[in-house]
Each structure stands twice: as C-alpha cells, then as structure tokens.
Image (cartoon, rainbow, N blue to C red; front, top):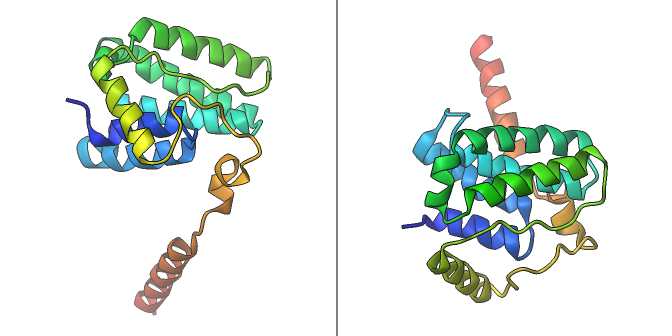
Length: 174
C-alpha cells in the first residue's frame, strides 16, 4: 500500500531527522515514477524536508522558499495526502505554522507529520527500530554530519564524472 521509499522518508523525517536523506530517497523515487512533473505530490514532500533542512541551518531564505513550494504543491494535492496515511488538514495547518515560524526567524524545532494510518505508523516505527533509530526523537543540532550533510558529503564521484564529461566535450569540439 505504501511505497518503501515513502516509509523510509518518514523514518528519516521522524527519527534521525536526516532531511537530506529524505530528499535523496524521494527524489530518486520521483524520477522513477513521475519525472519532470514539478507539481507532483512527491515534490511537495521533498520540498517539505528541504525546508526543514534549511530552517535547522538557519537559512531562513531557503527555508521560506522551499516551505512555500511545499505548501503550494501539497495544497493542490490535498485530496491525495490521505492516500499517504497523513491527515491533510492537520498537515497543511502544521506547514502553515512552520512557515510563520520561518518568516519570524524563530529557531528550528523538529516537526512531526500527522500520520493517521496505524499500519503505516507501525511499519515506520518497526523500520526505524530495525535501522537502530529512535522514532520521534528531536533533532540533534550538534550532529554536524546531519545538520550540514550537503557540504560534508563525499562528492568525489560527481566531480570525477563532471571532469570526464568536460574532457569529452573538449575532445569532440577539436
């Protein structure tokens, strides 16, 4: 009923608060099932995680931009939200409140999504436990590897790929 990707998204969103990983997981899934649809509900979920990532890092401009996109997309898909096991009214209200906190430049606080499907909640909690994570844990603001994940990750493969592509382009233009 619920995709493995969405379950894993929820696990990271509510356990280790690895919003960067939430983005990675759902972006790959989105590319597989609804690529190029920038108004996809999956993009809304992705933008919600990205907004939390930016807010936690006190990037209020990025947080506001992405939470506005999340709110816009998820509002358009209000009827579909319940298919994801989440209360649509409570979710949109929580996002609106988060948006207000970001606009006021208030400090980041962990957000929990209003999951209403008990079987989904049990699956997520089980998956978190299996991964050695604690469901519902507040974000560890001292964990630099999570808080600043995008700037601390190993990008050597991406850099090498870009160099190879550049070399090929230069070779073909000669």
